[in-house]
Length: 374
Image (cartoon, rainbow, N blue to C red; front, side, top):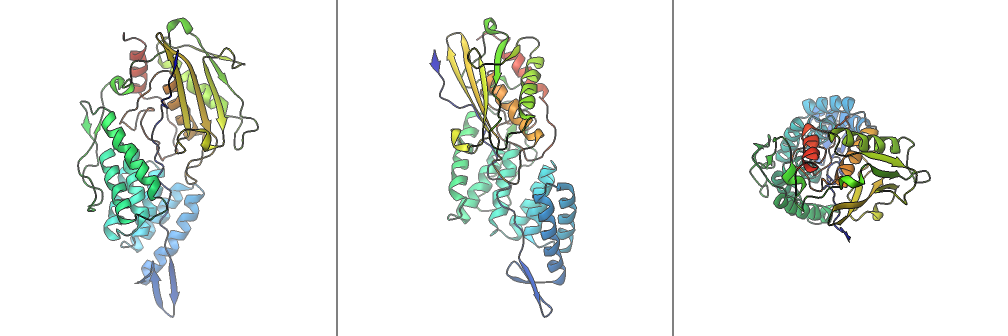
């Protein structure tokens, strides 16, 4: 038996929502200033609305925040900060195309706003538009080389470049938002290919076809209680258990699971931690490791984080469900990622906090994995 040291994980949108734009405004003796420049009374009023919207956004009242930011953009259409914050609210409502439009307008109005480039790159990433994400994030590092987030963003760029080279761009459609990131000097033009085929088998098996032998079915799964782990909630193991059941139900009888009370005889062991340092990549919300022999997968371990990677994206039942489904997919042998944000095995996290289920492509890929000969 050999141990697979490779961690099968997705690159998350670690850059997205790290930085809200906000605005700084004052009024004295009838003179208005916003973001360090003389402004009109309307722009000053818009800046006050931005403050209200940010409060709502931090409370996860995203629809109300979006309405406030829309008013701010109407009052101060030339305020880049209003467009950035409006874009963030839109993205949390899963209105990503509209959010990208707002961010591109923001970088055109004021290319000196780090948050605009940072969030544009992160949002492109969550849409599977890797070239555009690389372009916007590269522009961020070019313009702001000493920014506190610059080292993290450079690492993210390198990861996206490697990912872009590794995930096949098979016969597919062109991603919807083509073109350069905001027209900046460092932006990369062109669109990525986002697959719409019936499955993503070639992407999921880049390192080889790895699956559990039929002789080990049903797979014995141990879910360690997170009691005592900071921020763990009672329903978390129920969400994880449902993720296993959903994949098993999608397998046309090829995968069966049975939950056990001890890790000693388990094929798959799951646990929880509040310490990101316990994961190989501190920018991930979960981590899966597999052990293989000549017959296939013989053991898997999954560790989940109980703390959010980004404060603006708190862990909710919806977001945790996606993480659980994604990691269980890895544990069952879907070791690669897809370019399609509709798939659970998409390479990046999403921003919106909406209910998610396995896509038909997820289901088809698992069935094909356990049907097709090596």
